[in-house]
Image (cartoon, rainbow, N blue to C red):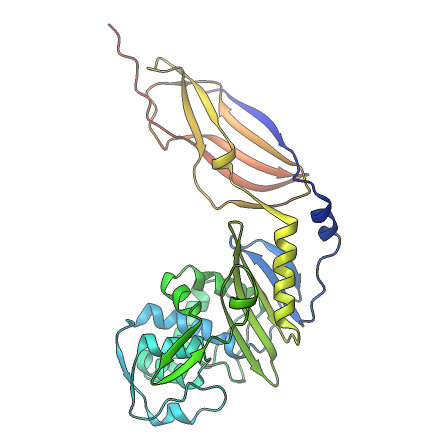
Amino acid sequence: MPKWTVLLFLPAFLCTHAAAFAQSAPQVSAASCILMYEDGQTLYEKNVDTRSLIASTTKLMTALVCLERASLDENVTVRPDCCEVEGSSMCLRAGERYTVRELLLGLLLASGNDAALALAEHVSGGVQGFAALMNQKAEALGLSSTHFANPHGLDAPGHYSTARDLARLMLACMDNDVFRALDSTPRAELGGTVFLNHNKLLLSCPGCIGGKTGYTAAAGRCLVSCCERGGMRLVCVTLDDPDDWRDHEALYDWACAVYRLYDPKEELKLEVPLINGGRRTVSVVPERGRALLLPADETVTLEIELPRFVFAPVKKGETAGELRVVIGQRIAAEYPLVYAENAEMAVAF
């Protein structure tokens, strides 16, 4: 079937405010930093692949592994060694019983190192076995510059990650509905004690839906957060950052001013002439894919490749052509185009 290509030009969403922001991206205090869109596109970066200590941001992986390997209502009896770990704690006492859900809340809200150990022992019998599960999951997620030695994040040889890997980990966590609900809980009463979520951005940053803090003297202040605004899901990671709260808010504000979402499904209305059918045309739509994040002040070219016509019958979902989103000389995204409906042959009388 002969094909033809149509070029469409989308006007830039120009505004003085966006143009000004494009020239003045925030300067952050972090040793390493990344701002990432949910499809993996990097919007801002600084030393993103430098291996670093990550403190309690480790607990993102701890929670994800637990959610995949234990039920929330399972009971856990706290062992004495869990109560002896240093650092932040949810004040567990030996012999007490908690559900996995309660321990996960203590892990994520209060950053309890004791909760991390209790969960690790429950899931795999101890730190070593649980760290192996964490590293298996890291490999499955493609976190090639990450290695875990424990479930809580206290400094240890062979325990490290990067800003880029932590952003990818956070995106995986936020795809888990249970994690997202637990991580965004503002307060919880556990064992008669009320714990407030350490993530201040839940209250101060519009659209923040989750995150995890971390600190050791060697790692400095570490922060991973996730924000949704205007349909955009963004993740920010700062490592060794004395001004992390402010830096995260500034990066989210900047990104939402400079970028816009483009969803070809919503903006394109395509049809192909239909031969020998019960109608004149058949509709075509992009097959799938997340909305594309584009610079607000750049012109976008759409290259649409479709047949000049198609013979009936046509089945919904069959490939019709291809859509390419081009910025300058760069192909920003490619989407298969498929028929949006069935089209039967005309009935002859």
